[in-house]
Image (cartoon, rainbow, N blue to C red; front, side):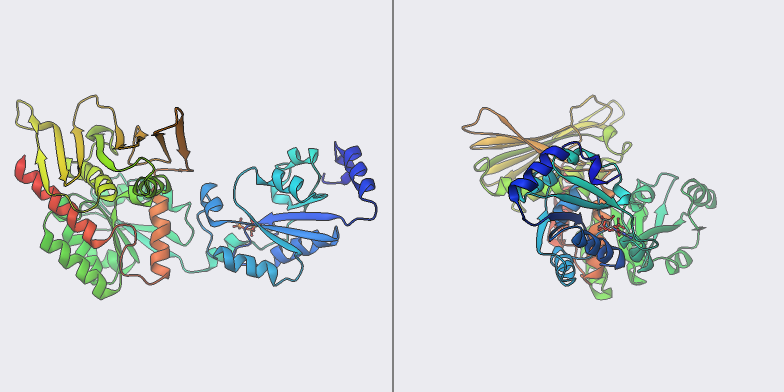
Length: 456
Ligand code: CTP
């Protein structure tokens, strides 16, 4: 495998070579080259030895995220610098998208593509364009291995039942983080959870639980939420909590103040703000893609939302979406709750009035509702179909074009991994404020929730 004799287009390749006469042989190789190690050096050196001119492609940050590689630690600049400092690369390029290799091979007139044997067979389709060589990997070293020797942040889950919200599974895709233990008030719940997710330990003593973890994920009802968050912060732990953190603005202020004092980050689990698709959508709508935004309409069925959460825990995602798109300048909130015979709400249309726009939330429980987010502007509209709070996709219909523009981003799992990855960056940067959802935004969310409750 990888011998030049395998090449299906060998004839063509020779022809090219003859035409070039005594020209140099061009080799290309690719990689992320994170935490540069001996294995990287060896493959670059051997690639160089196969020809006269070596091009090294280094993956861009966004490309790595797109292909689900969330554990890269070095910046693109640092990775390029490490490749450059080998003194072996004649040229360094950036690999930015899937399918770029074919274009590069044609563009740079490449003779040999070199890649490690871990990719054996995966690039055979490129043999139509150049020789493909799979070289044996250097044994016992990889970026992953080096990452795993670094700090591992221990996560503890505060649970009320044996449902974890996907955190255990999601941490497997982010390096440097591991779910170690669970706390529950009931011994039986703690044990069941621990067994189900194969954790190291379970506790019913909260202080003892806190002493064994670095990050606490508070996944419990509003009644005890503040207490668990506050005690964790006081012990200097980073906290991720289901949203809303509280319905009381003073308590919210106190929690964020304490977090800042302790030098830790308090993160609300509003996944939307960590998703590339949603951030791109916000950026584009703020940037005149559909003109001036007049309306944001979010429909959400409580039953489709992570197994039927409470009204607050569902509606908060829609409020967050509207705040991110229309801003914090909401002047009036109205609620039109429809209740069933038992006086329990089943349907509500909430409006958030802005001086020049309107946010509308259509929320229901036990109803067959269509989940959708639609933004109307003076020059077009943007739609996120289906479960818009957890998505990698949206579409736009823009004035002057009869075609639908589709935006699609890699989205894996339930999205929690993107939040965890950003939390690790915040920790390593020693930040005390969440950079995706600022305190003022959490404050605005609480204000709107209170306005809704007052009107229901
Ligand atoms: N490589 C190698 N020997 C190793 C590690 C990597 O030959 N021990 C090669 C890969 O096969 C690839 C190139 O180096 O052709 C860049 O690999 P990259 O994915 O950046 O490095 P890894 O150490 O494999 O990274 P990770 O653990 O994150 O997958």
